[in-house]
Length: 607
Ligand code: ADP
Image (spheres, protein in one colour):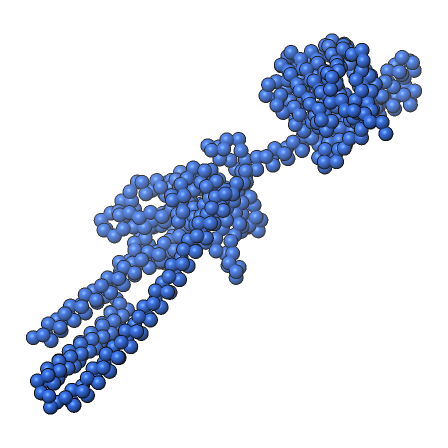
């Protein structure tokens, strides 16, 4: 009775085991088929999308589709549709009622998404789901059409020969093991039975003491064996525990490093996205997420074609321009107007390779290059300005000189005027070259002061003399407010002259004819204060904070029509600061400008 019960239990175990195993195998096969279909679908749709749209019109289109069906098509292809730019059907393959039964939202998603799209849906009379893979065809940077492929996933056959073979082998093993367990249990029960019988009889029959002592020795042996096995089992368990702990530690370390990598990527001031070889997003940093307005959880593990909404970037990535598939590696310049209006970004993509040189994915970087572009533009403008500034006076000097040498000007008054103009233009050239030399010294940090005693009355006279002719030409009056006792300064006379002449020169340049300039000097106890005011065009409030920047010139047309390099005030403020002084400006558009400069008076020590 008992053994029948055991047989029954073993049989139930056997059947349940086989059923569970069968279920697991079917699940696994389904998963493998899905993966295989996804790879095939992606590959095939990408291959077809490489054709220009013209290939799908007329007989050629039909021929291509027939070839796909007959030679390339894997099992399960249910339709292939080629759409033109506007979504119209150019060529099709597959059952008509199935194609017309495709839900509208599936069609829209495929026709209007920029990259590769995978969708699953049910259509028509069949109950089997359809897996659609679609990809746009691009020509000359424009979407010229769309390829759509629909597949049925083959249903896993429950009784495939391979599975029956595997189940047979497993059933045999389970059966053999069950039998072995059954016999082991019966044997153990028999031994215990006979052991208990012998113990009982030894208590009842003293004559059997000798026999019972032999049996006791055997029990001892059994216990010893049992203890030994228990010891081995314990050792094995602790071994497993240790290796478990090691595994957990390793997993912890891996998670920590993954976290660290994400933190490092997040701390970068540029957008970073890592793609695997199938163009699925593996990692993306916060900068990039902010640019594309996305969330990490919505992006990671998704195909870049589905997750990225930036059209230009997507086209750039799909064409693999960054990796130079066509022989030239290119970067993309683009904008993210919604999040960073007015900024220009450079997108680069480079292949990631493993130790053996196999491409394992791509790294996409997005860098804000607005400042570089501005600096580049400023440099180009500067070269254009300087060339113009050098060229204009040189042309005047050359032509006046030629006329004088050829004796074309006889009148003495005109000759003097010509000589004066040549002199003025030479001064202008000299000032520009001085400014250029000074700015390059400032750039290199080598502008140093050559200090000596500077008598401020000489300084004032020299500066006014430098701009007097230009002012006279525009009939500008120069008013002077000078002290009775001129303060003496300890500084670099030549550089102080450059600084003040720049202020006076600007006042002449940016004041219209018949205007007024006032130039003042006062002794403020521990500092000499120079003031240059004019009745000119004034400075717009938006220009005011930037006038001391190198190369900065106002875009006001009245300023732009004057020659200039945008260097003067930059150099002036640098020179004043090197003397420990300060420069300030007050101005209002149309009301004139007032610059004031304070230079501390240092004690002059003889010797
Ligand atoms: P530049 O005169 O060669 O353009 P500066 O560095 O000397 O360069 O001056 C920078 C800018 O500051 C000028 O382009 C102009 O817009 C403004 N500016 C300077 N001085 C005056 C002034 N006295 N009146 C009006 N605008 C001025």
